[in-house]
Structures are given as structure tokens and as C-alpha cells.
Image 1 (tube, rainbow, N blue to C red):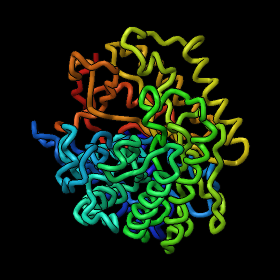
Image 2 (image 1 turned 30 degrees about the horizontal axis):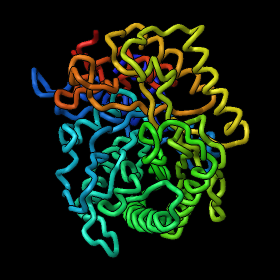
Image 3 (image 1 turned 180 degrees about the horizontal axis):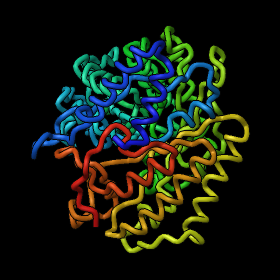
Amino acid sequence: MSMKIFLSRLNFQLKKLPGTYLKVLALSLLFAGLCTGCASPGGSGGSGDSILVIPGEDTPVDGLSSVDFASKMCVGWNLGNTFDSAEYGTKQNKGAAYETAWSMPKTTKAMINRIAAKGFKTIRIPVSWHNHITNETDLTIDPAWLSRVKEVVDWAREYKMFVIINIHHDNLTSEQMSSTYGFSVNTDTDQQTASKNYIQKIWTQVANYFKDYDNHVIFELLNEPRDRDATNDGFDEPSNLSTLNGIISQYNQTALNAIRATGGNNSNRFVMAPYYAASPWKSSGWTIPSDNNASDKILISVHAYDPYEFAMGTMSDTTFAENDEGNKLGYLFDELKTKWVNHGRGVVMGEASCTDKNNLSDRLAWFNSYIPKAKAINCPVILWDNMQTATTSPADKDVPEQHGYLNRNTLTWIFPTLVNAMISKAGGVVDCYSTEGENGNEN
């Protein structure tokens, strides 16, 4: 813990206590915490599985507008390639152990603690549900899968984090609709009906399961909904974008209606709604879901690995310049500001990163440009992390998606310089609950 943070906490706590005796007692306890409460992870040469101290006050969220609420989320991290693991062409229930199917280690409390202790205020937990259905008629979710997701949500809430959960890789091709549970974005009306049924039943169960959680838990209705029959898995802009966004609007409305119908805290919960592929540029024909029972509780959900060629498109584009790539980021956030924030609608950048191309200094320049531009429009950025780097990713990988930041096996930061810049530029405090050193392998 830095002395600046310690003194700030000390001053805050002393103001709340009456009398000299209590203040002296508080001072003694706080100094004890400074000496013992934030030890390096793993003790002396351990595996990094110890728990760091997290202070016990939540971010107030009552009565906030969607723009102010988004701002309070500050900066976040994605538990990528974990609960979103997916397989298609099967209706078999894969069980709770499936979180490791995409080569990630099992999520631990110490892992979530490390995210919070570093200074991330929000965690996004992407969840694919279609491999965890036990009854085809009712689309019943495996209770063990729900329980396991809840366990991780509870850890994050214990550490006072905002938590996002969603429907993630359940978006199917039209052909997969006969062999896999899920939904498809296409013009076949029968498949649209089946898709709405799936979305309604999944969100009814998930919303009921989490209905007693307060507004620090956010429901993201869908993840990157798109026509997966189209070129490039549907990520290219389709000629019938407006038509498809109309269908996505119906799916978002179905999800929101299911959530609100469960009552409790879900009647007034913040939700995140995406348009086509969650692309900031592809909103034509899309409408914000109607939310008659709640006021200003819908956040716009977007993803932007931009500028694309630098951030992910090709391994050969390794240079970031503010007067080129930085200007493109300026256009991106100006678009979101003009389209949404200026009209009182909060925006959440649910995924963002720039892939590792052995270009640390240029990636740092990207973070130093991207994050302040997002912060200027009160948009929190949630870092995508799949634990892959240029060193560890398969040599034949055709799409550069080396978005590794936390080594979840050792609980050390692979690129602490980048993560530290992200948090500080967002207005957060780096290592706010820890004096831990990092032994990552920055290149």
C-alpha cells in the first residue's frame, strides 16, 4: 500500500470516529494493517494464492443516471475463455468443470482478489449457457453451472467490484440451430421464434437466480449478436444491416422483458444492450429496448479492438502514432459521444485490447491514447484477457489474438506496465490494496 493511499484511508476513517480514544485505536489498527495486511502474494516463494486485503466500502450507485453509473465502473477486466467456453453441434450438458475447456485454469478466489487488488473496479464474466442445458423442453440450466457462476460473482462482490454477466457464445449459425441450443440472427421467422424462446428461458432463469443482488451486478443481454452465416463469421457489415438490427432489437427486448418480469431488484437493474456485432459503427436500424418499468437503466454495449489493423487485424502492423491511430480512436469515441452520451445514454466498452506483437512501447502508447478518450465520455473499458501472448500463442494462429495480461497460474501480471497505465489513465489507483511486486515477462 502506498503512503498516499494509507494516509487518505486514515483521514477518511478518523473523520467518522468520535473521541480521542477511538481515533488512537483506529490509528493503531490501520498501521498494523499497513504492516501486515498487504503482503506479497504467495508468501515466501509460494504459488501466489494468498488473499490481499480489500477495503469494505462499495461504490454508491443509487439514483445514478446511466452516464454516471457507467463512469463509476471506471475500468475492468474480462474473465475471458472461461465460462464462455463453447462447443457446437451437441446438446450434451458439459457440466461445471467445462470452465477449463478452452485451456484456462479453474477460477479461484485468489485470482479474483488479484484483479481487485490491482485496481480494476469491474469484472465481466462472459457465460455461454447452451452447453449446460439439462431439459430440452424447458431449457433448464444445469444447477451446478449456475452455482459455479454464482460462486465467482460472489467473490467479485466480496471485493466490491461491479460484475457483468451475459449470454455469450450462444449465437449460432442457422445450421447449428437443429443440433445446438441457442439463438440465430437471420431472416428465417421460425428460427427467430425459436431464438426468442431460448433467450427468454435463459434470462428468466439467470435473472431469477441473481434477483437479490443489487445494481453492482449488471446483465448484458447478448454478446456481439450477428449473422454467423455471413462472411467472416458475420463481423463484416452486411448489406441488410438495418433488417438484422431490427431482429437484434427484438431479441434485446425479449431478454429485457424476461429480466424485468422476474421482479425484485431486477425491476430496476442496469442492463447492457448491444447492436450488430457490438460494433460502435453498426447501429443502423437498431432501437433501444423499451423499458417502461425502469428509468434510464439501459447502457449501450460496444466492443472496439481499434484501430483494427493495429489492435488485432494483422501481426505486421506494430506501430502506434497519435497523429494516425490516435486520431482514429478520437473518431471512435466522438461517434459514441455524439450518438449516445450527448443524449444521456451511458456506454460501456465491454471488450477492448491490443494484441501482443512484441511491441510493448507501441501498445503502451495505445493504452495512453485509448483510455483517456474513453474516460472523457464516461465510458469504462473492460480489458479482454485470454492469457495468450506472442510467446505462448500457437505459431500457426491465423488471427492475432494475443490478449494475455494476467498469468492466472502464477497470479502475476505479464504486462504490468500496460495494466498500470490502463488503471491510472482511467482515474483508478494502481495496486490500491497491495505493495506486491510483479515478476512478469514484459517484452
